[in-house]
Image (cartoon, rainbow over all chains, first blue to last red; front, side, top):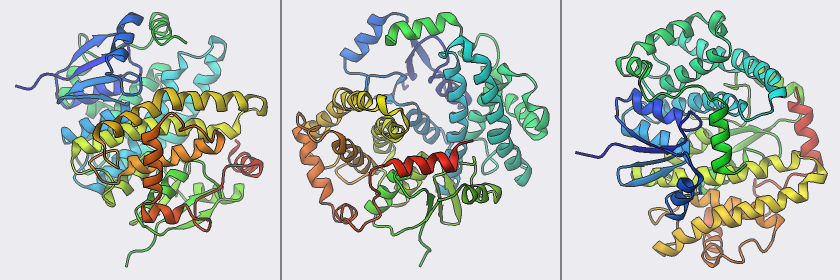
Length: 222
Length: 222
């Protein structure tokens, strides 16, 4: 029996959270090693396990995988969440890339100056409501199907629900103008693997707090 | 005979340049429609041609592709420059993600304050020489082959050559400590399709100048 994927990262969301979502969505059990001290990170580096000296690191199938998007693409392909052909795949890729851009703005929010928080949140909300959410609302409206691509559950659906929940943490009413996304959120939340991940006690991580920010800054020395 | 891809971007490198390199390496002829005014950009947006209201956008195979990574992956997959199996594809993906991080610094560089630019060049060079180049030097040394992955030309080779070439423009001796990368650079530059792209009359764009920077602000500034 194959060993479970092993995730090396801080005890928090950051760039690893999308990977946790995708594994969970695919029904794949995984283990985690949490970086809490600089020495642990230095050991990973000195052992040559971090290709470009960075985490996330996912150990699976005899490989030491780094680079978030490369890991996500590998998982999507392996677990059949990448569409049925190249045309579906490129649509999933485009939707995921847009969603990841939005999520990265939110993830970085916590590392910016407190005085700039309000301004940054306002910008994120504006981008979410004018650039990203309308696109997905329209996609769902145009084809009338349950999932974003090919009438089948894919990486794009998992990435979108993760993004929706993150934006809702900033402003709970963000989906008020997007009825189809509201329905999408409910639908995807009820998929058994996703439902399980959304329950307390799962490996889903909470929103970053000061302790998380301080830990990351200490370990990565910035 | 299919129609040629059509690239929508400014007349300059930016985020489209990797796509030009890849299409050229794949031996694919393409057309370009240059964005020169704000009105042109607005027209593209209003006509719903840009999924997330951003360029690059590449019209090909009946689709309007956006998001640099998605476009690169699609072209690589279509033209067999993405490895022979999932493991090779993932290695290529990891290497390219690393290179894109470095290229991002290069793309953003012309937009920083003039007084900060020399410091940034030092920083980019330092990153290249300490974090990225040693990795590729070791890969080439360990397998002794011409290409990075699977003994054949891939997206990874093209993006690495592009990155080396952009950095050499700023620091001519940047490869001085990397004999295998020097060899790699020569060999890949001599691949016939790439050699053609490196000739003066090709669609390869010159380094960004003040006019290019002015145009970007004029067209994209909110």
